[in-house]
Length: 501
Image 1 (spheres, helix red, strand yellow):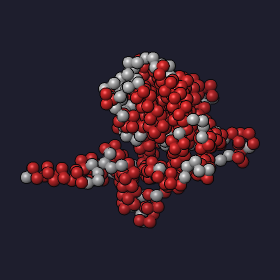
Image 2 (image 1 turned 135 degrees about the vertical axis):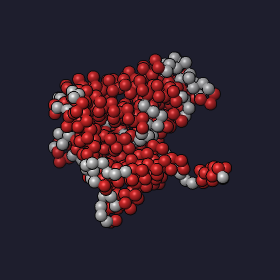
Image 3 (image 1 turned 45 degrees about the vertical axis):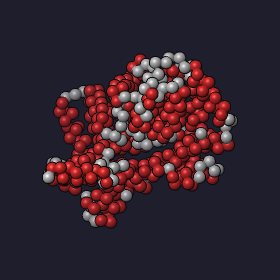
Image 4 (image 1 turned 180 degrees about the vertical axis):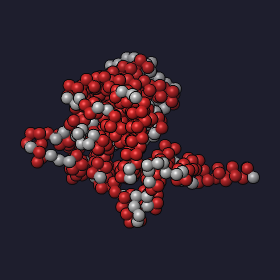
């Protein structure tokens, strides 16, 4: 009997389009939560939405199916359960409400634009230029990869496309030039070090620009809500606030990794020859590359709101309008075509899962769950008698290190950030609320340093085999603590100079 059950289970495992054991666990979580009585202060429908939300997060963490499918599952369940409305028509309208959010379309369109970097070869050219200038030593190559990340970050809201799709192939090519290959067990020559630098530049640059990773616009929205509109992080304000601590982290990060995971080859003069050879093979800038550079320059000027600063507020353009303008310019110039737009699966996948997670977070807030949770947390911390500085530290650290439980920065931010920001706004004296919120903003990207599943970039680089699990987690923990200290100390001083507190 047991053998038959085991055989049946193995059969289902081999044919169903999802991971059966995680699916069973997720179902048990959903049923258990739905059977529990609603906590005091929450209506039953609010608690049922919490159950749907938590189950969705569990399913994403356990990777039952691709994140887009799990997001669609949430849309279907919200629509059928009618927890947000007393009619099916109202429920489906709520379930699809976030898809008209300009912030979501900013992310989708920007991912489509970033496709041009790979198609034209401009991304590879930028990386090779920095390697040709800085590649005499392995640590210099590391700085070249970090600078490449920094240059691309303002234009690539997909940190996965930037770190995993553009910079990582360059890193692998350089490692291969030195016969540093996991298949040959020679990854320690230069590959392990460069892979770690390749990855850890990604969270830092993601913290430096609103347009550097997908969930950053959501962070902007949450900060504005929690602060009552007193702290608004537009593109320029965000970049200015994160400039000094971010650059310091980028400056020191390759050296820390050099100490934690030193490469076997310290001098790499051939890297310069390799980069110059590749640049020579690529030839001069193509017309399409020039168009990409021009479009990027115009978009950066418009995102930075320079025309409005120079000629008045009538010239202010919404960031999503700028993104659509850039995409249209690339299409009509033939730099990318409509087939490129249609085939960019990551953009349309992001539209579904990001939209669904935003919808869940918005509906939780609408039904009072965020207010309820924040109130309970506020009362608990207030009862502990902690001072405001300890309160801020506990909130930031709890938020950042809870990312060990998440395989998606967007899911984590959607689940927890607004509640934590709201608690801080209530418990921290008003003059110090901005610095707390800026630390939370930085922490929302810094938390990506921790694990090999922390964000879309990490499984790409980890999966290439250059870094062991132990190395990844050890370096990740050290870098996370280091970056938090830099942003707290140096960032705190810089924000004081800027007048934020």
